[in-house]
Image (cartoon, helix red, strand yellow):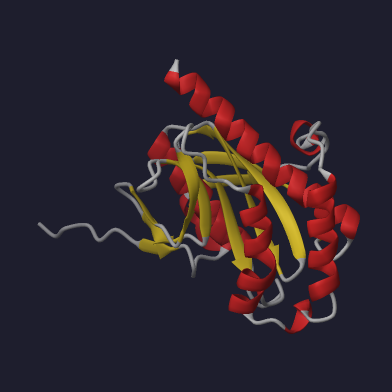
Length: 225
């Protein structure tokens, strides 16, 4: 008897059509989907505002010329470091280039993630938030199916009902919410685009990330009780 060969889909190469051929995946219109997330009551300090303004001033004219590594190191990483996702007390932090593999009888989703925030300090235990970074135009490389595949894998591996993420193309940020409806059946919503070289947009991006940090702290606090 021949052994069934299970197809393997790598995060970095998967296309939206391929993803939709192995799971049920429906896109939902934003409407008020992001209301709780984006209309948070987080206050940005004077020091944080100064940091955000200086970041734009330093990189505004060069950001389009940065390659992927330059974009990460010079512009994205400073924002993530300013949020300070590492929390020793609540036992979570940010991780880079983590491998995730989700296996079923019909397919395997696997690959290296760019960035995630997860329960765990020495190693990732339960991811809560992902960021997928791309330098090129979305017309040539679409980060959406890669991020969605990562979110699906994380939901299934960790028994979650909902998970958040974001993808970055140059200076443009989009946030994503994925929900599990049933086994291998999901719906997702993509926010409008935030241009990080515009101060008001960068403020909102920063607040959105801080909200994620607060949300994870609440989840971790509940798990300790």
